[in-house]
Length: 548
Image (cartoon, rainbow, N blue to C red; front, side, top):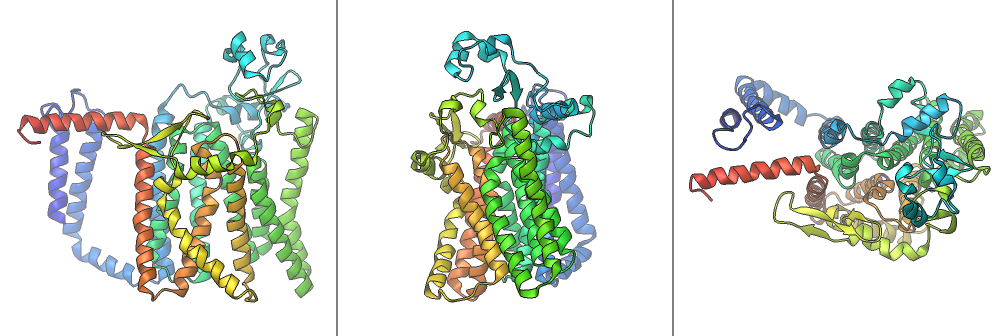
């Protein structure tokens, strides 16, 4: 191995130094590609030297790691998965970070409005818009040219602009000055929420792992974590990183964080009330970020409150009431404050601004949710085709004519989802066969909060008229947690079965497929161009030597 690393390092450095002479790079200067090649060469040589110089120490470390208990090894794998995924996130977000023309700063604009003591935006609508007979009619705005004078996707009411996105993320920006807020774009907020969401996903997976004392191999924990972090649509959204993606990531960050802390509070004796209070704050912020998470929050909150009330009925301990208040108070206050916020803007506690959007459709005369969209969305999100092309990245999503969005079906891009059918059917069979069998309270909470929440979020998206890849993230985090529980439960009962061991290997293979498909489909255009150019230059160089 050390000889291979040293040889590979030397080759990389030589290619970087003589890339102009080899006609791989036409630029005599040291660009990003040459620097990356040279850095890779130095890294390989360093790794080769370390493996040669400290071979005995490395072998000792490997033996020590293998002798650790599964819980500690599982945490090591999860930690590695976190740093690998966040590194990939950064490289996929980098082109957007470097883009000076990014105009999505909606959370910042709302925060600036809050700092000036108003709930409407500081920007005033032009008179040309206000004078239209129906400003919500896109065709009319287009024909009169007004569409070029107004921001994208804002709500208009009583001559003022509003955002229909939840205000919660903007509250964290109020502490900064107007000048500082102007530098914070939605792409930065989206990236932070994406990393935070993945962190909470790993914390929750680890908590479930410890709670159920699962017999799954510890290495499976790391592979599954990578699948949850790198499968569609995370990289696709990070590459775009605008207000839409920031809102979805933000809501899921607060939702998964709320469920994690609530789980810790219910099934952990220490600091239970504090954990429940933190969980309630997270759920309250999720409610104030995106309305689509409300169904999942209501279900989880109902299950949590029933658990706490049952705990009080059995123990008659006032501590149970303190826990109940600690958990329920933040979401209740969020409901009150959001009702006030809506009334201040639209004279209605239940109106979030959806009906007053200046969008492609006139929402004042249109119902965006309907069962009529269910079957078409099943196709859009699960079986929509992926195009194969003859150059890198070899895969490309297919344009959806109805929404003008590019889509790719999950059964093709994340086929690991198929593996959940078998354990789900087995669990259903077990419960049907033994209907009187008691389910542990913590297990019931997990199945309803994660499984039930996933089902409600999925139905919400399937009933929505507008399909888009980013909406997959509305149900994906809960689905991954539910999938992990199913796999862990089945493997615990069938760990000696060769068939189920083969099933676990199938999960790994399809998981790797899911990661690679996401990486290729979501590759930023800047990287695709550079890689194709380099591959072409390398091909021409090889042809010059009579190879190929």
